[in-house]
Image (cartoon, rainbow, N blue to C red; front, side, top):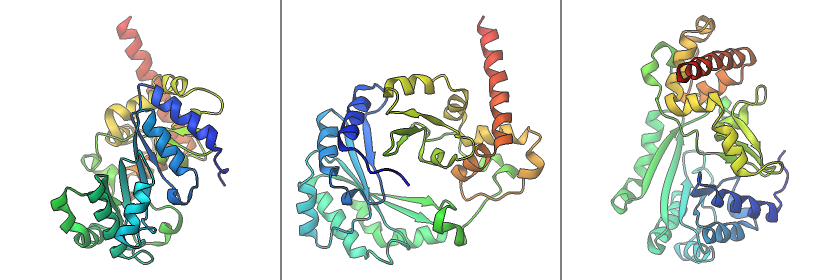
Length: 289
């Protein structure tokens, strides 16, 4: 259970992020951020210190287009909205509510993306059709594969044997989209919050050190640098050349983040990867010398 955020601490962290050369964009996620009383303050402060501000929401509050406009207007400095809508959200939040939200954003000049989490390609395409008429207005629609976590572990999700065909894995990664929780813990990505066994890609804590210090330490982290350079495909290649390949080659994954979390949260595999990357770093240093 995460602690309730201290508003002044959050404001201080936002300032630290803005003063860093690393980040120019801040995204507020939940739960549902619009239930957080201090969100308006965070948005305004983030904008004031020069950050592009985004909120991920299910849009429950957009019961009418007029109400959506009024609420959005009450958040000065809000640049972008990401609306979560899929078959699971639509069970409780009708598509008309998302329509209201999209129209209000378009009217007010707030960038809007609709994010669809789907258990299969077919499911994603089916939900995308509901919103495709907004594409003419430059509304971005993203279909994301589902992660088998929480309630989703009970669902049938399309899976792939990535380690049998490394070309299915991307050679890029959004590992620089850092995740900060209300306890001040900084992770390379939201996926790294699942590293309960190894703490993979945990970067530091803003309650104990500055954001600049955390970023400096990150930049000397061999695992971060490797994934940043080669993506999940590089990680897959390391595993394909490892003693663990026989036990892993037929495992099915829902997407590349699933593969990374399963591999990096295994203590034995994690130690092996760090050892291999340490040797690579030593060889690189020797060549420079």
